[in-house]
Amino acid sequence: MSSQPLYRRVADVLRNEINAKAFPPGARLPSERDLCDRFDASRNTVRAGLNVLVAEGLISASQGLGYEVRSHEVFNLNASRFENLTFPQNGDAYNTDVTHAGRRPHQEFRVEMQPAPAIVAGQLRVSEGATTVLRFCHRYVDGVPWSTQATSYPMWLVEKAPRLADPGDIEEGTTRYLAGLGVEQVGYFDDISTRMPTPDEARLLQAGAGVPVLVWVRTGYSEDKPIRCTITTFRGDLNHMNYEIGNIAAREAGE
Image (tube, rainbow, N blue to C red; front, side, top):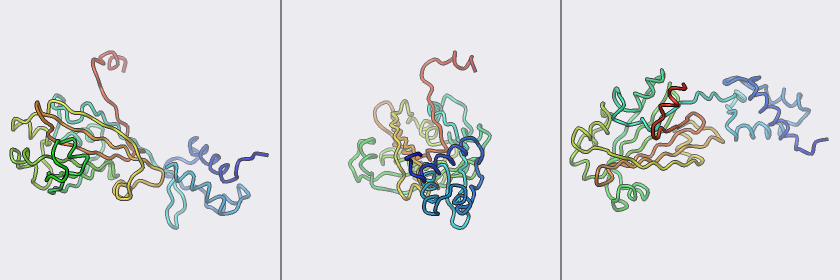
């Protein structure tokens, strides 16, 4: 007889069936009562097994509706081309990339003056608490929350580029707007990490229990100073990121 706790066996069997597509994305699992009969287990044992899968992000629980297998339609983001002015774009990079992927973009904006938190102050080389302009985007792909993006600009730059403080989108994208004013982003530094979401992030991204976030901090530079700090927070189960570095013509030829 296995020494494994019964709730773990419940989780393992259901996980294997989900991975084998016996329960495809969007499908509802059998009721707790049916699972109790199947595994000859108490409701608390079955619920503990289901909670393992909830914590892994495989299923979600809805009040009165039972358990459903999560859908994972992943969006692929090429981080090298994102915001790169040498690649053709129609509007900002987000709209271009999502549209080119044959999917539907939607974003909500807010713009506000905000004291720079420590991470932003360090990247922009300003004093912690110094006033910055924050452009915050809540972004969706096909109506599903995809990311939040918080970009902070130092006040010296806002004086040169006043549209940064205007509410709403900058149609051509902020990077192109600044380049048109002679403030060209010539490079950037990326820092990427993963962690579990804060309660506010989980709410905005509709991330269930067990779903981590990918945090991408990109600091953009002109020839002599940093010009912006962008913190993008992605739902970890819906996003895939890649980079292009150097000459990869051989890879493209193979494809």
